[in-house]
Image (tube, rainbow, N blue to C red):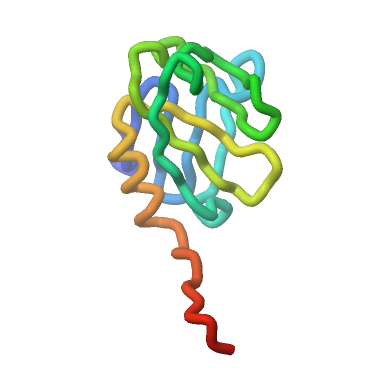
Length: 116
């Protein structure tokens, strides 16, 4: 792992400024998602009918799963809200580490108490 990387596995890299998703675009293009563009990250449980068997692509038009031939053997993934219609879905080897890296670098949603 590069000393500037926070996390790295075969498909996902967390650098100081962005998450880099290898195999996001056909055939092997990398998508770079800057932390400044991430509104929220949500951990999801995988199942046979909820993305576990999907190696790449989508069956739902609002979610795009990055390439991960090992997804069938994983139980959790991360859904990134980047404020656009299509949300990247990733399955890092260590979802907790990637979620922590992202949460440490994104701005928290402003809390409203109902007062103006």
